Image (cartoon, rainbow, N blue to C red; front, side):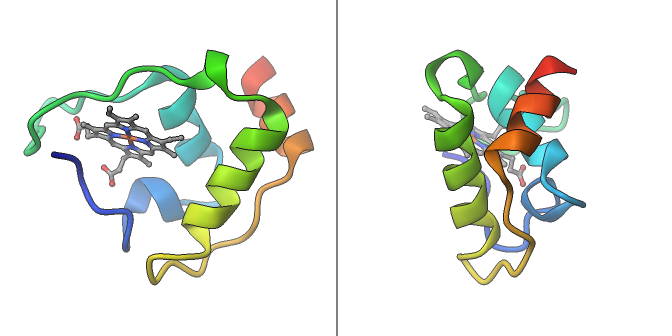
Length: 79
Ligand code: HEM
């Protein structure tokens, strides 16, 4: 149904801004290999909630990327 989080470049890129943008706006790749598209979820998650989800996924499923703070999410949301 959807791509794996393990090793995903969208999940592990940089400080987490790319992953945050996927959750803010959703994603539908032109070469999508999966059955659906992802709807935007930014409006239903607070900065704290989104920071916790991003941190969890970036630090699990074999991923070892840095944690994300609510302050970072707030700044990215405003951008
Ligand atoms: C807070 C919850 C969620 C997070 C953090 C999240 C995160 C992500 C990320 C990072 C990607 C890109 C992964 C990659 O391509 O390597 C992705 C893609 C996708 N997500 Fe989500 N997602 C969430 C909720 C959902 C929900 C609720 C659905 C569907 C009901 C969904 C459906 C999809 C689909 C279908 C794709 C692939 C789209 C494409 O390849 O064009 N996601 N998600």
